[in-house]
Image 1 (cartoon, rainbow over the protein chains, first blue to last red):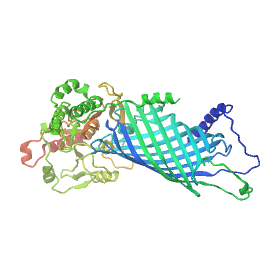
Image 2 (image 1 turned 120 degrees about the horizontal axis):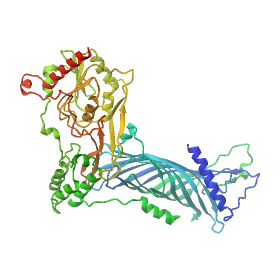
Image 3 (image 1 turned 90 degrees about the vertical axis):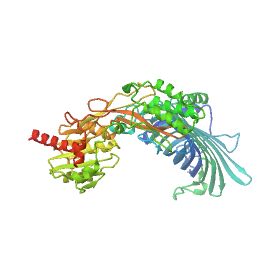
Image 4 (image 1 turned 120 degrees about the vertical axis):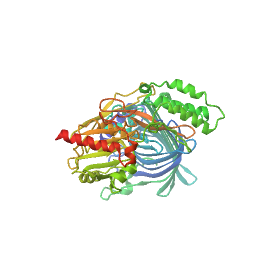
Length: 294
Length: 336
């Protein structure tokens, strides 16, 4: 299914970029015979910060607390047009522990997500080091929110597939002698599908077979999600220290059920570029290196 | 596009009602939770607006938590629902119908005079072959997990009996999945077990169409009991037990003997107030296979209504169990 989604996403992005092509001219100056090396930009990150969850299937009370996330991001210039196209894969597992206002009840949220996308890249000659990217991605995210106080509604299961608009700005510069990369990225799902039980439906009833009305087309009328990521990569030799901020907004209103999920987290991690230099494919030293981010 | 996204955000980020953490806020939160989620208003013909106004007049700005709890608890009792509780750190409000009826069960009589303190126990089921070659099993809590292997052992041990008594008196309920597992040992083909309906919105009349659900027999490799079966009940047979009895009553080789069950056919959900009190309430209605509400209990089979007799008890006899022996005998004769 992911492969099919990926093909459709590719087709859509190509169509959008084809329309933009006459407006923004980008030089793709790869010599035909020139060896191109496309390093993989990998980052392992750990997020920690505040979280706020409202899920009226579980409780009408807004819970607040802390959350954390382990993430892996992989970016690479794409083979068919490395100057212009960048692919990005992002996966993460996150956990939130939140409490009600009197702090006597606890909810636990555990989510796993996978996202793949590709973006078209513009290098602005007027601002050296600045590159802008725009494109699309698809994300599959699922997990559970567990409220231990509840009887037959202890869990709110979440699964959401989305197609997203995505944009990124990256700026490479030096602070003193230290190379630094600033990056801002926004992801905005605009269509998809997600699961929600009906207003007073128990999971036991779903188990018995009553599954009508639990899968919904997600659009901005019943669901609005947004992800903002700001990072600074400090390049210390071959490895970089990544610091940043990640903000998540997830909201939905369907089956008369209200769901809000907000996080604001500090990001710390390591990133670096890894190259595959296989022998017998020409002179490595003369190869042209096209980075996805740096 | 950003403007469009933001406008849509305002739509999808739907407003919800937040209540203040003071006596009025907590009372209103409780009233609203029940108003929007409780599933038996029409069946019980309850005017919840009138109830709310009557009890809200008793709320005062400076009242203590204990005083507020008492007002809220009294309001919930108007629902006449054993599944509805207000839970604070010092008390649980309740409406337990069995407190108004004969107990109809004395475990000591069973243990001493019928089991001679000699019984087996597995998966929360106490069982033994009685002196008249009737199998007896008491399942006291549907929250006790039942293993297939345990049931195989129990039913294999009781296989040679002429009949089986399943005593679910004082069983206050538990997991419906255990009901399905137990019923599966007394059927040979798929049965219609009942209907389930849930609320689809906050209105008192917003319900889904009742969904028919079915139980399958246990796998062919599992041991079943298909001889005469009598289920013993009292008013403390509640919730999942009530559901079990409503299903067993429809089986041709089963009779229900004792008192009407305690009811509790609404599947309870839990919510909470701003001050941290929990409230449990009936959220989904489960109907019997005939499409009837069993919120107020399941009656025994015809001519099987019986209460414990104090004279019998004094002489070490369980009137309901003795009636079960007679019924099994009659069922056996009719089969033969």
